[in-house]
Length: 229
Image 1 (tube, rainbow, N blue to C red):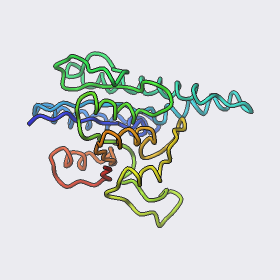
Image 2: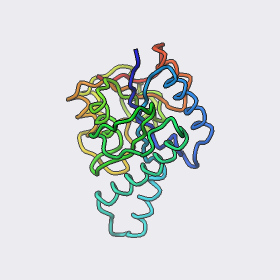
Image 3: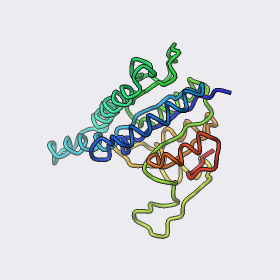
């Protein structure tokens, strides 16, 4: 049976510093293999490094004043659009010809790859992925990021941080909080978390750079990552 998978592709792995050409080549091949089996992939690109570079530049230029959260969000949204255009082009004729920015509108296309960007302020592209799951009647969102698991506390600060292989949305809210902050580096957007919880979605967070692991997930095999919901 054909499936529609919703992918939130972290900007941090599209462009960790420079554009990750080798990753994108391998990611492209894996997705092409997936859709050649009759499946569909809806991919939302995050802003990542590009977003933070521009947001930080704005803050430095305005210092001691600060840019508004709204302005910072719009910078982030535009960064996702640039990353999304790159992702769309690597799928060429297999992809819908435009980057979609309104995740609540279903596009009428037979193309097996659809690429989206950020849409509105006050959230990250994670929320757009959740909205796309609702629009395309998908039950699962896969967040491809730069961590293997969600941890009970920040592993960069605490050596005793423990990976969480299974967790509830209530547990996630305790970790990410309830409010969105532009440029925040969190395992999943708090606004998106609330919506995913209401929609009873399953969200899987895994290290997107480990494409063997992602391939295992797509094949229904055992994989490394955190399952939420």
